[in-house]
Amino acid sequence: MRNLGKLFGRSPFEPLVEHARKVHECVKLIRPIADAVLLGDVDKLRELQHDMSKAEYEADLLKDRVRQSLPSKYFLSVDREDVVGFLRQMDRMADDAEDFAVVATFRQLELPEELREDFLALVDEVIRVSESLLDLAEHLAELQREAFVGPEADDVLMKIQMICQMEWETDKLSRKLARNFYAMDGLNPVTIMILEKLSGALRAIADHAENVGKNLRLMITRK
Amino acid sequence: MAWNIGANDVANAFGPSVGSGALTIRKAVVLAAICEFCGAFLVGRNVADTIKGGIISPEVFSGDVVVFGIGMVAALLAAALWLNIATYLSQPVSTTHAIIGAVIGFAVIRSGPGSVQWGKMGAIAASWVISPLVGGVLAYIVYRLIRRFVLQSRHPVYMAKAVVPITLGVVVCILSLSIIYKGLARYRLDLPLTTAVPVAILIGTFVTFAARLTIKARTASLRVRLGDRYDVVESWFGRMQWITACYMAFAHGANDVANAIGPLAGAVQVFRQQGAALAAKTAVPPWLLAFGGAGIVIGLGTYGYKVIEAVGKKITEITPTRGLSAEIGTATTVLICSKLGLPISTTFVLVGAVMGVGIARGFGALDLSVIKRIFASWLITIPVSAVFCAVIFHVLMYLRG
Image 1 (spheres, one colour):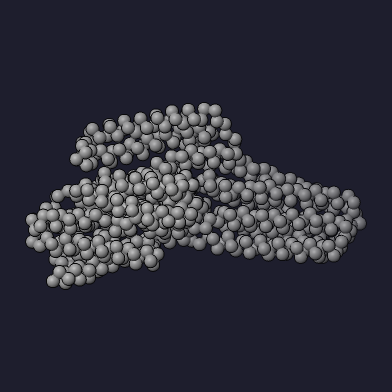
Image 2: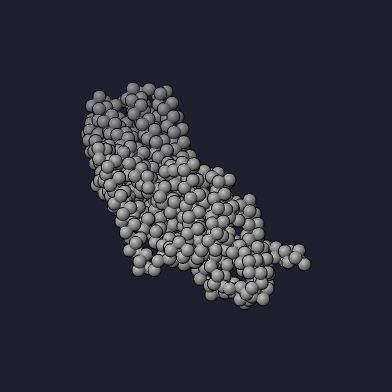
């Protein structure tokens, strides 16, 4: 009888990490898009938006693959709900990144010099949040191997705290930017609307990243 | 039959150790051969007695012992036939269930359901359900303890070095207890409980201290980088995994040799006594145990090593800490059942033990539908091998005239 091998299902953790990588790929595209927005390069924006949609689509495919590796006949070492939540929040990060890319193509923006620095600072902070999150997600398979305890797990729990901190930083940067562009005289109202939408998408990415972190914390501490 | 056991079943005993990379195939085969043989020879008697004389009342056949002998041969053939068919269909079937189904089939067809000792049979059936659960609980406890005291501690490597010798001592203690308590009388291995327990504990303690000293001497100047700590812990458990694998093989040999030689023992007894009244209490002769053990070893050497390799490749998820927990849980359960004379399926206990480690968060994903398949195989195997046995029995009787 050689069926012992059949006892082991496909672990969801490796595909989960793969999905996280793809999501970060989407978020990373925001920086070149922001640069193109500031330069007013419409062609470049179209091209980047196309790249973004493609990456987001690929992330969706990976997401479906993880979902498929979660049939109810599998007994998992983490709560199924936590895996699903983790995946959902990750997916929303990619969705919001795509939103950002689409909104950026709506209209050529004329941003005054004073706003540019704040805008780029917000973009970079959001990408940093996503980067730190990917760093954690990369550890998932390893955490599983170590049965979710020990120094490695403690380290990840600490870094999750840091991501929450960073999310707060993006909130502050976004508020500062909003204060500046609403207070500015002579700014085109449509520009204000688009700026509001863009920073809204950025804030949402950081929000979801924080939620992913919290989901990871639940995976580690539950049970 | 013994060949079949050696070829297919031993893989499950050694699969985890090979899968975790703690043992090479070559070493695994040699160790498995030695331990299976020892288990079969030293502890195999109790279960063989059960299959020979515990399931059906031999008194029923005291009139025609030759028929009894033919029935036992038919049972062997039927079980072997069904096992080969099941293996061909790649269904999970236990040799234990097949042989017991066949023996029942013979008894019912020959002299009605009354000749089966249903009380005893009920106890055996209950042990089939209980033993995987016990294996699971034991494996869960062992893995939880490792997780709590080693993986979760501030100094995992230091703790691993302290825990490994203790685990080793406990394993050796249980092993030696199983050999010397009510063992083979011919070699004076039948000490009473009051002597056997202290002796076993003494041996275990000795092994613990010896292992501690060896580890200390070897690792005095070793420093471990922080990032490597987990791998070092696993490697420490990996180093003792060949011993738990031997423990598994020993327990497996002790329980499963009976599937091959239990019926044979009945038949041999008949042909020796040539018509003398069949005694229920005649012990299985040691040479027969050795014969069964040798059969298992030959099966292992001719085909079993391939299966070990295949199983080992499939279950790479089993790291030494997990493999060791599952092995200790399984082997202890199987050994206890062997001592009680209960014929159980080692594989199913191992499945239970792997589940136990899974509940302790050891594995990424376990496919629970395996449990369903196992229940289905229970339900099918027993009637099918019973019918096979009945048919073969009639054919043999017809040939005899």
